Image 1 (cartoon, rainbow, N blue to C red):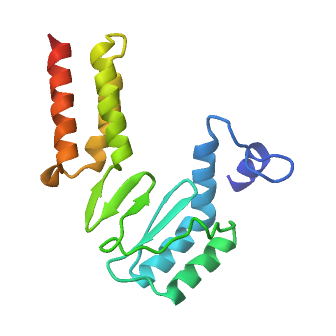
Image 2: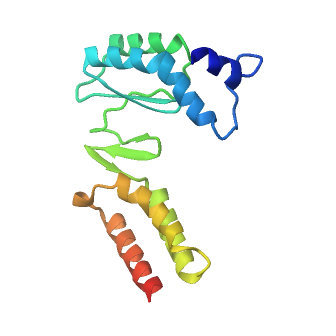
Length: 174
């Protein structure tokens, strides 16, 4: 399988073909073969949770992740990938909000950034005035909101967005 991927999915210079519909899946498969197991094993020893979305690697823990552990993790990553140190940050989400793949984390709460909730409100408003925008287009965008929002602890912006969305659904159903 590894030889098949090397033969049919890589360019002559050794780089993974980019821009093809299957490129993200191929990259995920390639990365899973090369690095995920090694990082998961190391993280399991350290009591760290490892998650990855394409080339965005996130390491999280209830306890601070010390310099030695971070150095060990970087050593494994450097075997296969270069690290952009400008994008590598250490955050205590009880002191500072962190954004991971577009979702915000702060004080144990997960939520969407304000710019996305504002975008959703604007899209719902536009869909309310333009019947050519399908309800499914609004529902799909709101799906991101529902996945990344804790319904038990909504803030005012989130409550207003839900009201606007509910009103939109009722008005379009009539």
